[in-house]
Image (cartoon, rainbow, N blue to C red; front, side, top):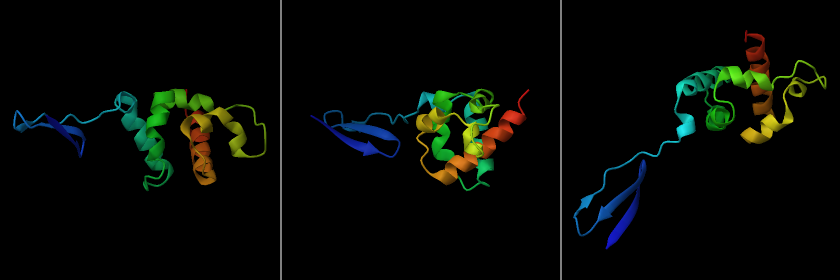
Length: 119
């Protein structure tokens, strides 16, 4: 007979017959681990003055783009509207699940600046 409990870092398995615990294995999302993850997290923290409100987009940014250099490619050189949001491909917001206008504005400003600084 086996009983399972949710542990802090994932599932812990307790086997009553063995009288012990299986080793805890933290769940790691492969897309959030890699050379670009720290860079993307730092960039997001800088955008909102360290409040961390934008870090919820770290995983989708890494999954969709992988690094800041690739991320800068979502900025259009042609302005379709008078708004800075017009410089960002609409599919970007959908891919990341960004709905809050404030988050869109902050990310758009950061993306335009990022694109300016890319070689």
